[in-house]
Image (cartoon, rainbow, N blue to C red):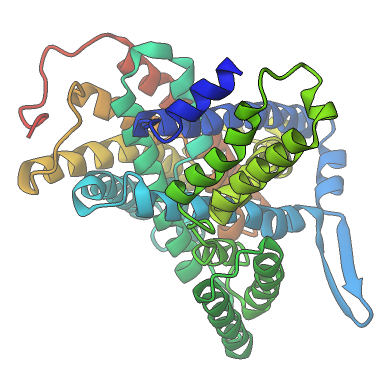
Length: 454
């Protein structure tokens, strides 16, 4: 009973800090990088021990159909266009949450990471274009623009408590802004010929999503059915189907059935009868129906106050971390080193462009545009952050892996270009992770930003 009394007395007084909520989010993303790392190692081992088996498995056709309607694609394409839509859906949910209540919720908060992310996309793409303009590899300019948020945060989490929370928040915000840019690039530049009729049908589905949102419909099933319909329309329109995941996410309600004050009153009303009945025994829940009803009512109140956005994101995050992303890495990261002429591959403009874009372009672009933002737009750095750490974050952002491999698959059909690009992505990600970790661990910088506290 003492626990119930304490809970009742303190209910409504809890004020979890934004840092605590962010730490939980950071931990989820960071731990999601470990299964991805294991799957990457497995893909490389498989592709080198049994290259024919690896290729045959992921290029085998899988047909899904109902009656006369059937879609036939390779297993790798189903992973890239269907399962990865769920990943982009969760990306969209997180982007929406950050815009509403997170690091992108105000112009002052958002400007620095958005500027840094913009520089971290433009400069790598420029380096790649300078080396590949007019060649077969020109289409891969989007590959070095991307940041793998799960991998980069996993590396950051391994560095331990020496890394200030401000750095973790900054990297997360940059990566999320980077994701927004990647989705726009994929939608606008990595599409086949557009079917306007299917695109129009998709627009009608989006309109329906807007209507059910305005009507305060909170049933996840409704959004799931409309989401599948939108995915089919986008898939048939020629725009890459994963864009549908982000679009649907923006229509998922971000408010619960009632606010926290109503929730507190409901919980109080159900706890008080339990307190008035005296000291409960261990088996009270089995012996006393009042207790059972109260517990069930509190459980329902918890579900009602939780937003559909939070509920869906929580339900999907484990599946994305331990299922979708590792499966994507297994299907796309297999690089057969025995089939590569390393001299030619390392000197190829595609490999060099990606490697330089991620290893040099990312940190240079992020650091330069962050400096310009602080100097001319007067956006503040978080207290205690120094410029060496910003540069270190820039290198970690050069871990492009998942998104880079994804755009690689959209850029090239030539197997040799695909393999060269994979080599560039893997080498660059390893180098970027190593250099970024070193810069963040070598100790506090002697020179702090003169704008850090402005």
